[in-house]
Length: 408
Image (cartoon, rainbow, N blue to C red; front, side):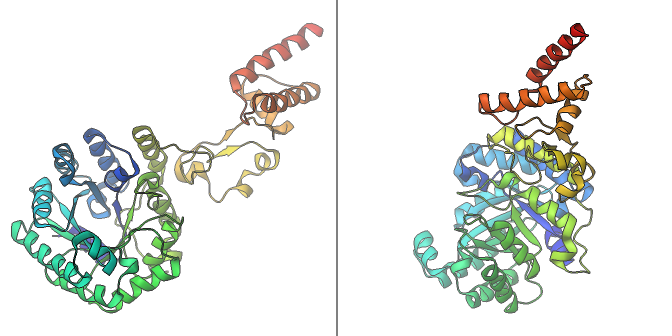
């Protein structure tokens, strides 16, 4: 049974996780051990339903022997937590190799990339788009003949510049041949949201209900998330994403952002009757996994990174300190398990100074508070760094309160 097709056809959302595969094109390299760990942790976001909600693209076996073995290891060691996929080019040898890398493991998949636009077909396979797509049909049949326990998916590369009617025809043809998913890719990330919605709607209009469409939408114009939401609104239920958004060039939609939005606003994006989960995602796992990926890849989490960045749950000015719920779109403690933290910056108010001083064990009077606030602001500008080190502030307070006690 193809549990991913089953999920999508039941209206459930499936995340096709690409940080270990497309993420490599962002000049990152995950060790085999980390890929196994990340696959397991991503699946556990959905509890026992991880294999029905997550396809983990473990790698591209044709790259080298080490990559083949890495994919094989993920398939063997994470099969209980996710559905594992190997990705390959549209060539018989590559399909055979990809099949071998996941064969014999539970819920295994292979994704075969074939060009859909005329320009991409000429570059990738030196054929017309129709010839390339017909080749995709033949490769599905080959894969099914090799091992019909491994699901095979077809990715239409450069779908955003391809003919929708032609893609509809071959989406049906590869499905009839035994494909599980048909993935429409905005390979260069140049598509606008309305065009993305129209593409998925147009391809869907020319196929039967047995065709399951999926997304692979790059973020070169910063529209990967918006485009993915449009594809979901048009009926797609399998969506590609990547932890921290890491993927080729400007990346893909970030997994943590996509899961958070869908967990919080599914009915708004998918319709009032939507039931997107077998088991709803545990959002409190998102910051921890994101930090794991950042440490492994060297991709930094910044103060402006949504959902998992260092700015989430922080307060540094007066009014947000008094009424934090008015200045945040959600409760980070309740939803993400992120405890609020007051930071000292050049914007600090008397309330902020007093709160931090109290946390450090000092009770300040009004004069001391004014002096401490002046010290914080001066230090920020003197060092050229907005956030003032709390250890240095603690030392300052020790001196300030000690001097006051002596004077008294």
